[in-house]
Length: 239
Image 1: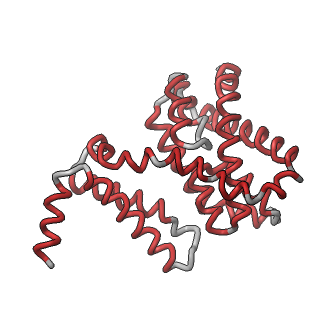
Image 2 (image 1 turned 180 degrees about the horizontal axis):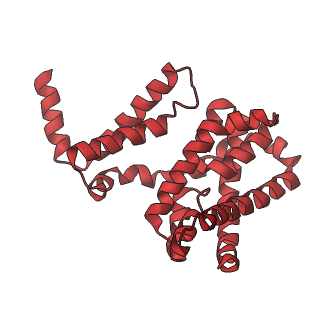
């Protein structure tokens, strides 16, 4: 058995599959801890997986570019996974028909609030224009946020960090905050989490309630569209 494991390790260590395997194992470990904790939001499997992977890269002195070369299949699957969110949303069409106007208003206001709050806070703390641009699309799913930031002169790497942190905070504290404000409608909760915390928050929403998850997925997609429309105008106005 030990010899078999050694052969597997030798094969993986010489192959880009090592990064993909490490990513899947790290997430599975995070998911196991999440289940063992009784699904506490603070024990977020994505957060745990990121921590484990960062530790592994530091210990092994592996460049992120080398890691990403092997793990990019996970990045590629972000697209199909996002499209697949339409499946549970289809089951919520009846609930959606009764709240189309409220949904549109929530998306528009949520998108503007996310952009303008990031711009204002970064500016108030003395951030450069490049930093301000990098942080503004923090509530949009990573590929779109990075593209917007890069196109307008921001740092895509800083944007990616801001997006991940935003998603983590939303997934961990979003439900608690909505409870404190007495928001119990699952559609409203889903829209709020989807707009504010994109994919990571949406994943958490699905773990809590199917309706919440479906509306979070809808909000995530529409917020990406709204941010694309508003982002350049907000930067121009701010500048």
